[in-house]
Image (cartoon, rainbow, N blue to C red; front, side, top):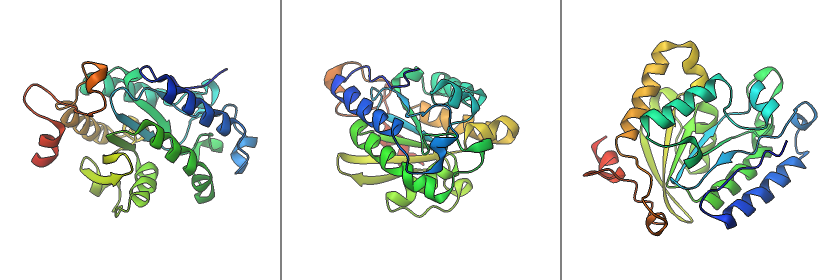
Length: 230
């Protein structure tokens, strides 16, 4: 199965991401390549300027070679479509790890370090305006990379953190992982609330000319207004 991503609006980005996917398929930097069924590079589009970063592939993801296609993925897709008003194909979805850890255990530090360069390359190509960290492992890695103090998912969730990057500014937002929300109704309510708040201010760019501006807006408010109100 060819598990490449699709960038709907930029063939050049698509080709660069495919090259990274090929690198990942040849990766032997940690032992996970020996136990995985499929590599899971990620999929989606840079159309909206939003990238979701999870923890690692699960069983269904390992089988299909696609991120977030199990029960947690169904919940994530619903949140993206119902709360953000976007189709799943209009955001980019990936994980910190590109291979499934045995029995869905937590990622090991050496595995995270091995996969980290692939994630950073993907972000550099996509140049997102917003990165949503799904769960503590993703948040911990990216907060540290961008020089932010990670105080735990409970304390930072739902709050935007703006950081300067090579392509401008990125807003980093951590939320609970959808998998955790499946088994804890109270976490699901919090997750839905965080997505709803963000979704009030998110809409897809209307044409290719204004995509580069990353001006995610609604009728009267911009994403900048959203952050200033928090």
